[in-house]
Length: 177
Image (tube, rainbow, N blue to C red; front, side, top):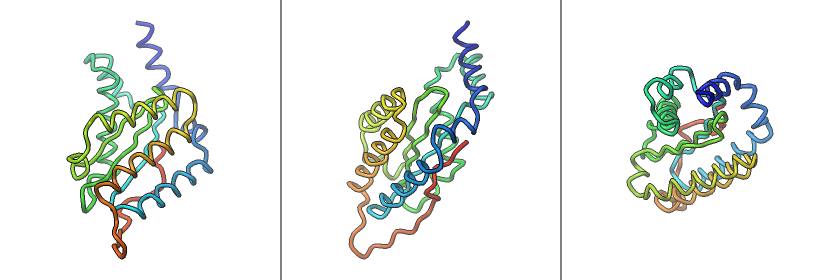
C-alpha cells in the first residue's frame, strides 16, 4: 500500500520544472544538434520526449486496473508517439525516445517502417543501457548513446545516398512535458 502512495506522490510531485532542471537548455540544444546531425545521415525521424510524471488517468490504470507500470508507461509512450505525429512520416520510420523522470525509465516506440527490420531484443538492449545511465543520473550520456544507437539502426536500413534530399518532417528539439 505504501508503495502505491509513494508512486502517486512522486508522479504528482514532479512537474515540467523538474524536467527542465534535469535537462537544462544547454543540454536540450546539444541533443537537438545531435538529432539534426543524425538525420543528415538517414531518412528517419527521431524525437525525444521527456515527461516528469504520468497524468492521473494513467496512474489509475496502474492502481485500479492493476496494470504494470511498464505497461502503463508503454501506453503513454504510444500516445505521445501519436500526439507528436511521429507516425506521420513519409517512410514510417520515426522513432520516439520517451523518458519518464518519475520512474527514471524509458520506452522506445518505433514506427512500422523501421520496426519491421529490427528485432525487439535490439530495441530492448538500447532501453536497458539507457535505463542504467538514468539510474546513475547520467542523463546526457544515456540519451546521447541511445541517439547514436537509434541512428545506427536507421542508417543500416534508411541510409541517405549522395544527393538524396531528406526533408525535416518533425521538430528536432526534445519535447518537454
